[in-house]
Image (cartoon, protein in one colour):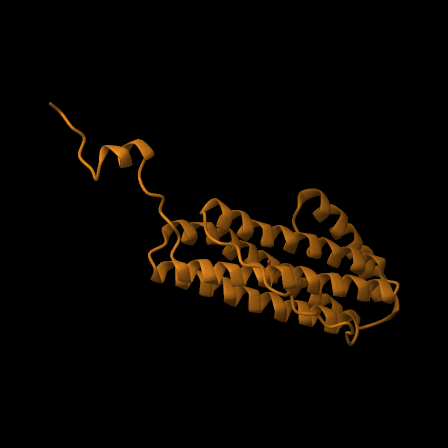
Length: 190
Ligand code: FEO
């Protein structure tokens, strides 16, 4: 009589064991979930700063960033849940409440995004070190996203440096950022 190969008929009935993501990858992904929540909080603080200066376009641009970072956090959350890994939520650090002008706000944004890029690349290293192919592929979207985010912020910053922290140039930049925010809110990009 033919019998299937494998550990037991009971196991065959249940199906193969799920491929769990390794514990160090789970820990690193939970840390990244927290970083994305901090990013969201950081951009909310910057949106409030734009409001305080009466720069509606900049406030809206950072509000779109705030929402976009929440979606990044939720991508990690959904991935962990889908992989049957434990989600560990921690305190979210307080972002700064004051900034030294619009140029400084975007300089801090670029520095922050570069830090996020480094942490995403670190996650890829952890996934590869543990031969976790699913997590490695999941992270590709974030690697590409960071290239785009840094390029957009860098472009805005170089023009803001020319314009400075006041005057008609800043008014025009604010209008442009308002249009970008409206377009990005529609497409879901920022
Ligand atoms: Fe979620 Fe802007 O990186």
